[in-house]
Length: 570
Image 1: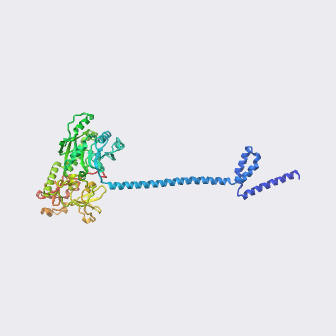
Image 2: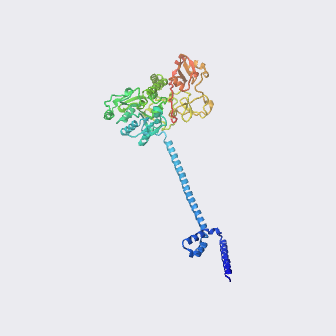
């Protein structure tokens, strides 16, 4: 065979081997493109000096690397699947944890609500000390520290912060212990702060205390002894170095450090220093929860402070209680720190406005108290047993009616604020429930309030203190209030006293500003024009009668204005 023929034959042989190799690859399901990595590896091996093993490497590549791309894809897919599975597992565990947390939170919340509802109204045999404050952090810290040092347990301290800017609330929250803190979102003044604290109080007895005071050894024990000495005593106050009225005494010290030894000597128990008084300033009061339930909250119509304490004391006396000073209980009073912070000019404006409101609301409070006391004595003499007519005998929850020793004495005749509200008037609470006052009972309206009736909001304790009557479910059972003068038959008024129109508003022709309501065959005088207007009475409701007609009627309890309550939580 010639050389050229031999070369052609070798060429055909090599071509045939290539074809056979391609056929083998096709039968194994591989395309030529799958050998790209093998070719690259052979080239790399050649560059690394592995030229002599080229065929062996090629065979291994053909036999082993054919499946490697698929294995790599499977491994990568498996990794992604594992990561997804892990993420899904973590997600499931997170979701499950969130569900368990929410379930636990809900169970805890429901249990807290249940316990709160079951314990609502329950009191402990101790004292709730209420301290309203505004921007006087250092004073209130000193005050609280003196209580903790010189007050026997059990007690709780309730600090009501009127939106101070000096960190008072935060400092009190850090204090902990027996201190409860209410941080209000706005300055509600002394009356608003005290009322919020009264709402929170859980003690059988309550102390209202200025933030700029320091209590001393024996202060509370001696005041409690004075309060318990006579069931007629409703409120007790201490003596001090700086206050108006007969509670101020002469002291030998000039610096606070010198005050402590003086107070320790002065506060030795001595009932001979206990005395009755006509006025107690609100820098420190001690009273029972029963009295609070009868008298109610402070009037928040007084701006910032001043005269709201005099207002509340009038209602205490109208309820039939007496006031006392525990002369053997001395506390230090720095003196109107919050009020002085207003500045002399602003203080004068606030004081003047509050004084005008006080006079407008009460007229002549001293005469009012004297006349009410006379009526009480007269009723006692006519009814020696002391039992009120139509007395509520329904069972009551002891958590709502908490009595001290005096409440069981029939001769004391303590009264509630609601007894000084007009017959037929409409009352509402903060939730919007409406009641009508009929024959000394509250009857809830289970129907929409008829047009023309404007209920007066009162505190929930006031409503709970009124015996419950049958609910009203028909608009036909609801009578308007107040009655318009043209709806009143003058012939009924001009007849016998028994013929007066029940609920009518009358006034003598020569004194139209002195208004009365006819109720139960008696004339009940509104203590002021403000009181009448507070109940929605205006000139269009008044029927003019003669003075002789009025004088011929028996006198009933006066009608007072309910306190203004600006806090929707009361």
